[in-house]
Length: 74
Image (cartoon, rainbow, N blue to C red; front, top):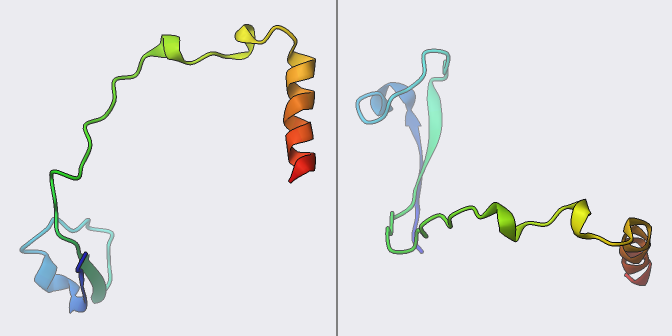
């Protein structure tokens, strides 16, 4: 992927994008990437039922110990 990177005067960007009033700099760095809309994924719908909390664990102490044991193996 190709990108363009330039240092420009901030006042030149004001005609292109909205600059917040508190953004008081004279020069800024601008990086431009091509926008390929086909790459952007549609957000997956959140399904709460697919997430299980502590209530789905029959023995929380054992589950915690198993997690700690995984760290010891690394």
